[in-house]
Amino acid sequence: MSGWLIVAGLGPGADAMVTPEVSVALAEATDVVGYIPYVARVPERPGLTRHASDNRVERDRALHALEMAEAGARVVVVSSGDPGVFAMAAAIFERVEEDPTRWHDLDIRVLPGITAMLAASARAGAPLGHDFCAINLSDNLKPQALIERRLALAAEADFAIALYNPRSKARPDALDAAFALLRETCGDNRPVLFARAVSTPEEVLRIVPLPEAKGEMADMRTVVIIGSSRTRMIPHAGQPILYTPRTTP
Ligand code: SAH
Image 1 (cartoon, rainbow, N blue to C red):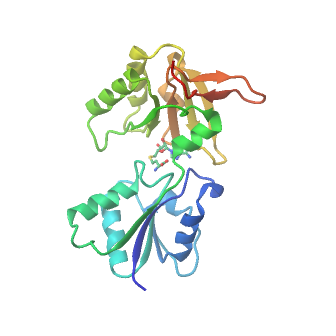
Image 2 (cartoon, rainbow, N blue to C red):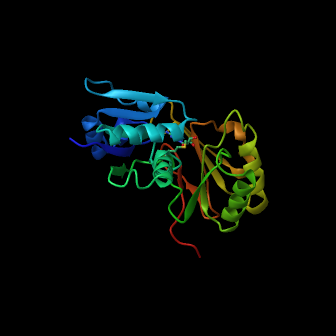
């Protein structure tokens, strides 16, 4: 049997949010490749080799996966959420682009998953019910000035904004700086959703107005959603609903 490479999203955490086609790919795989905690989500079984690596070695991981598939293995590269959202699918194609003729005939597929902002949005209501954008706050792969420009323009355009990688030990102040920048353009009524470890037993949701939002309310397992000027809370039994109506006057 000839090899293939599938880049698959495992969803935000819950087994129930892994799609059936991803489960089939994992059942057929000979090798699973990815960041340590994501590979740990794939149960061991006979015939499956798990290759877990640190999250700073994405280039090496991509080449390793391509080479195993080229040699005949059935390889699944796993990401959390969706593999095309700040994750391994683009890392694989960056490698393919470096040497396109080598991988020309290799069977490569991407299987989507439920990305963090969509899982978080669903838990809170529908804060992404109208136009929105997603910004990765990590400055590993782009200059800080570009992040600031995108935040400012997103606020000016009145998007709801999902922030991925909002905080890390290397960037303890990045999220506070982002909130300060957004406060320059956005009014005081913007709700900010901090959604941590969505769909796992450690899930915590918290909603505060933008003036009260603080960087320390997030960690690397949190996705932050800042509402547009139309995003609001409506009372509901149990917990209030956060949503953005589909109309803009
Ligand atoms: N490919 C992933 C994103 C990888 S970047 C996806 O589509 O979801 C890693 C960032 O995703 C984290 O810093 C956090 O902002 C967000 N994230 C991933 N899983 C999450 C979860 N279960 N709950 C909240 N945020 C999550």
